[in-house]
Length: 65
Image (cartoon, rainbow, N blue to C red; front, side, top):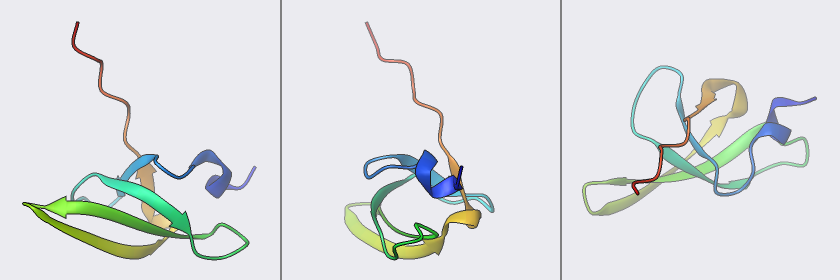
């Protein structure tokens, strides 16, 4: 299975090299190997395009009772 199939729009990811948690906004090619992500830097919404190999899944946080 291609790694892109593990991610869907709305999945929380981060760069393997570090940085903020980001949300998958869309895939930018049919092969799902390049991902457009967005994140907040303070109050400013940022975005960037990354190869899928540079990303890793952020485990879901447990919900407060």
